[in-house]
Length: 153
Length: 153
Length: 84
Length: 84
Image 1 (cartoon, chains in turn orange, red, yellow, blue):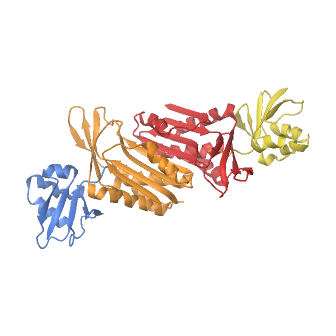
Image 2 (cartoon, rainbow over the protein chains, first blue to last red):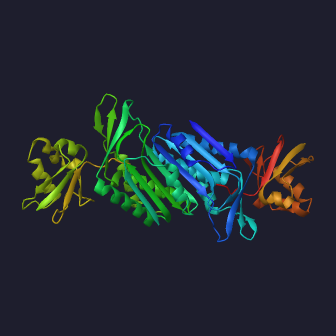
Image 3 (cartoon, each protein chain N blue to C red):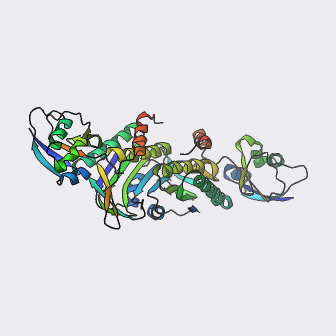
């Protein structure tokens, strides 16, 4: 099992990260990338705050849980922090498996859990300089909770 | 809606393809890559045969169906043909959406349907020069059939 | 009626060619009828008798073997697909 | 008992600092007790009274607010996470 965790300000390379998973010989690689979206018309950036000492181990625990639930060969989770303009990548979760269903399901699990079980907070910056902290979404809690009841294939 | 379909012998660039989807402004990009896996110890390559006149429109019809079932901003499906050694990419399906669930579900749909509704046939080549056509898998038929009964979010 | 036939995968290999033009006689109404006609040629064409293992496309759209071929220009015969 | 406190997101902004070392008096057994102690300082510390909006981690592991702090070195107080 190959687990790669990144908590970083810098952007990452999709090619590098996915090729690392492709090379594990599994035949199936799935990925999800989250990008800063202009939710309100005047959002110009998201600021991602993290708890540095905790973030990497929280992501690693999520990845570890995924490897216990699905037959995975590799898991990559990279989460950025700092001020990220609209269009910038925030997070990558990606998996390698021999089975496409396992790769894709685990990927959905990883991002759902990253949203509720990793210490990151988002602040939305507007063009006029105003900013507000993003409120947690009930749908995100529900998505994470659904996996607790879920019996993976 | 941006649909990109490729039926080609050449490899593709994950960075190029995924960045195109990221640029659509949706905030969520999901992908699945299928790679030639050494199933038996002595498989050295897969040979992918296609029905060229039909393949692109069959993939386009699958992509179109996905856009009708999920709120997508973009769909990319690239399927290679020819002799592909172990480790080579065979297929990429990727989606962009405002919603991570839609992006990931549609991605799973696209690959499940590509396996049963696009005119490609795989032949497995062994190191001793022997080769056999891959038999269709009942599990693939079941996965595709499940989507017909599935009510997307 | 002239019809373009295309063969793929082990159908192509059994027949020894990737397609041909056939002159469809009267009374051959469906792909199944066509398969029976081809199977009757014997030798490699015997592959067309294994209808439960065969699939087809008419003018580049998947169709059941029971589909009518009237008006068709191109019929492709192949095993179940295994791509992806 | 000396304890490192860390504040994140709008907790940090309300308090005006990203953490501090507190000397935990006897009788303060849980994170909830600690929050009450902090809230009693008033002003920006009033944020610690909004316990239903607060979450915590003890020594870098998520914990319920009812968790005991005996033996802890670092307690972080923050709103529900919104990353990903």
